[in-house]
Structures are given as structure tokens and as C-alpha cells.
Image 1 (tube, rainbow, N blue to C red):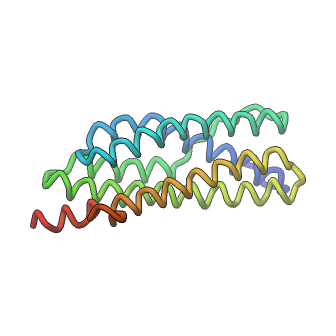
Image 2 (image 1 turned 45 degrees about the horizontal axis):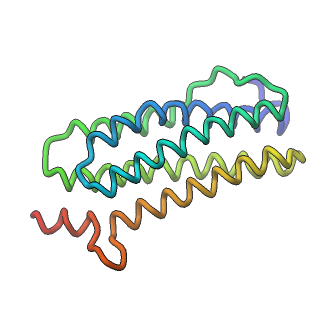
Length: 170
């Protein structure tokens, strides 16, 4: 990898995000099938559809930049997904496992938020307004997904949340 300019850094960030999102598209169906909380399952399935859109936006960004999609492998996402697999294969109370999967999913969201925030800022600094907007749209969706996970864990106005349900089973 050569990092001689901000353009190089942007391309590296975009390649890493593309790999991360592609890995996530592969992993989310397994996560959705392993959770027991209906609202959590629905949130994961909805985020899978959004994630497919994130991959498309990244492909659009590379197209706007006139660059082919690099063959990159995001080791950070690989590690986060491995941790999620460990939770899915763990023994124990299904609701407690759902809580642990929410925590793992929020780590993924925070990782993506950091990556998209950096890439969006770089695109803006370099004057790539269309790419900046694509990245900003995805950043907004990632932040919304994180908030939804928090709401599922802690509950909303009319529910106690997955955390409370797990605590009640003790």
C-alpha cells in the first residue's frame, strides 16, 4: 500500500469500507437467524437491506472517482464478525445471547461510523462533493442503526427492552 496523498488515504478508506460492508452482507443473515427477539430480528434484517445499499453507494463512489474497486480485505470487520460468531455459538439463555449480539452489533456500527466519518471528511476536503454526499447518507443510516440497537437494548416508551428481559430471567 502506498499512502502518498490524501487521495491515497481516501481510496484506502473506501476499499476498507467496501470490504467491511461486503463481509457484513454475508454475516447478517446468520445473525438474524440466530436471534430470538422478534424486534431485533426485524432490525437486523432491515439493516441487511441497508447494508446492501451501502455496498452500492461505495461502488458509486469508486465510479465517481474513476477508480476500480480495489481488492482489499478489512481485517477489523473480520475480527468483529468473529466475535459475533462466538456469541452465536455460545450456550446459555437466548435473551442474554440477544443482548450480547446487540453489543457486538453496536461495535460493528461504531467501527463503520468511524470509517465513514473519516472517508466523508476526506472526500469533502478533496472537493469530491458527490462522494461526500454518498458517504454522508450512509453515515446517517449507520448512526440510526446504532440508535435503534440502543433502543432495543434499553427499551422504548412502551417496553422494557431486551436488557430488562434478560435480567428478569436470572
